[in-house]
Amino acid sequence: MSKSKKKIQKKTTKKPESSPSRLRVAKPSGDADYVRKCQLNNDVSGKPSVALRFQEISLRHSDVQLLRGPYALNEHVIGFYCAYLQSRRYKAQSELHFLTPSMAYSMRHLKGRERRRLAQGLQLDSKLFVFVPLVDGSHWSLLLMARPDRKFYYFDSEDNRNLKLAHTVIEHLRDTLSAEDFSLTLGRCLQQGTDHDHDSGLHFMCMADNLADYITRCGYATSTLLVSVQEVRSKRSSLLHLIRTLGGILPMSSNKPSSMDL
Image (cartoon, rainbow, N blue to C red; front, side):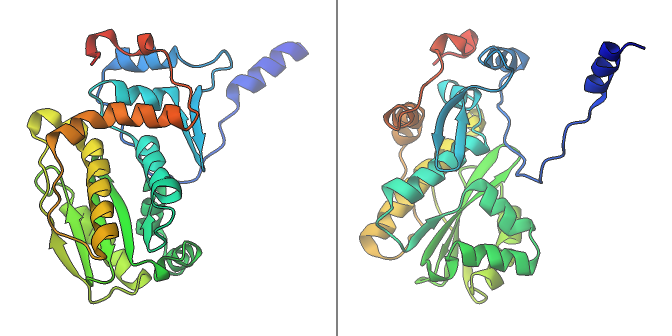
């Protein structure tokens, strides 16, 4: 066998390196045509084109395309927004902390000592309010640890769909955040409706906005969030504008599925 053939054989049989355990991302609700068209947006090297690098988050063009149609938002989009709230919008409010989805996943799955080390690195013991994104499949909901209230607040736009997950996360956070005796309060918020199951990520972001603004004004949390339908409907366009404002380069709108244009 020639050397060139051996090289080809070696290249094709090489196994990809295993990557560390990550949060299972929420996949878009579109069909195979959506995935194919997003793949067309990759560069010639086969690597996904990056629309924006912000903090430690890289938003790919395929992530941004989720904002242009009725698709469920994934970990990258939610993580970007949490990082934006933490480092820009509420930078002056040191008592607030917004966990990214990957950090929330680690808090749930790391062993006790490793989880406490992570919490110490984030200085969560000194935070009065910790926002925790919860995701099961493609459905997002919001959990808040409110130290002044001595409570956990849980908000879900679809009839407390992630409540079981919330209980699990709370049990992991009680010892880590020195919140052993904190009670759980189920919050009231706008419900998304059965025909808008792809909008839970938008609801999560609007709820985080509403709750953080309330806390900043009042110094304590609330169990009732006054999120309007219009806020949710306009969130996709406002996020696209935010990405552009931060220096992001958006993919051409013609690359999104034509059958699902807004």
